[in-house]
Image (cartoon, rainbow, N blue to C red; front, side):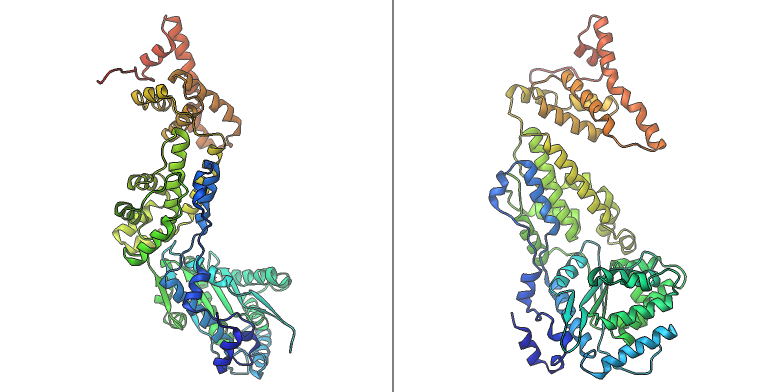
Length: 538
């Protein structure tokens, strides 16, 4: 890496500017790739760990980040944006004092356009728009980690320089809410009480905006990053225009560079307002679509594929590569979640059945069909390339919550399971009647997914038990877990109430069979809850 002194000596506009001098040096492309890259810890020997530990290893992939070409371009644009914004705000020049004086007058007048001095600014705006899950927020967060958020200056003046501040756009697009978030963000990093002083709800919004602008100047804010800018599309009345005009004023008048980040739904904000679009395009308006099949996609998949914590390593085939793209549609976050969930699923199956832990194309298809229902409308829109539907469904937060819940469920299951000892007789019986227990539980009123899970669990816990004994164990497990189930609303309780006694009716059927001189298994076969065993080749 080059040193800060080298950068400053080469560029005269950086000389004698304390705000720039204290920044870390700009990164070359190679150094930027090394810094942004965030591979999870991986050791091949971890494949032999118990399943509950390997599940935690798979969870490391949530932080996986492999920089691609557009990520490196973003780092370069941000680095330039930050430094150029400070060029016209050198605290050793009189222009800096004039900016502070104008800020005081804006507070008194409650008008951001007030001020007696005209100071030419060098700040620009930058908009980053892309599909949800394309890695926008992750990339900008990694870039921000390179820069200290606060720099203390003691000579020739005492000042706390705030290099960057990242905020989420308010859901209703309110400038007043944005100001309040700004005050809270400053208090968090500086230990001040600006929110208590300026963030009271009774303060008018124009006064809040003037105070926010003055604080940004006073603390030499380098870049203001506003994420989730698509929330402005939900703003009612004049809120949307007020927010856009405020952001333009921060760049034009106050001289604070602003980076806005949003999904594809935010494109209409910049396309519909030429003035805002022009300012957002100061250093470019990057639009990140989903990855297309090609070198970048293949590179990312190959790097990701190395992180397998299954007991057996699976080779990456063209069929797997094709299915991964079909089920993720080139969205990086969906691809990573699919890879995680497939490993969860194959580990869970192995824990129940003691089977090899190989992954194939069919496994990824089954995993997507089972777990991607929460984003199915978005995936369909991407497959048909319907831009209107894409903007409607461009939100992957439900998938993130879903994966977290699956991780917790798998961990709970793995704590009570160990790989069972193979029993040839039990395996033969299971092949003869593969669905007898699950079918009986479904007939008794359990949902199919719960029935499948409970059947696999009791088979693992009691490998030598008969179907009738296994049904009794399921009934006992359900009774034991009953008090732990959360209270439900009236509507849900009405639906679930009739299902619970059905499992207990199995014992009634067996008792009636005994009165009729039938065995318990014959009773269940006669009731249609258990299939009769078949022997021979037919």
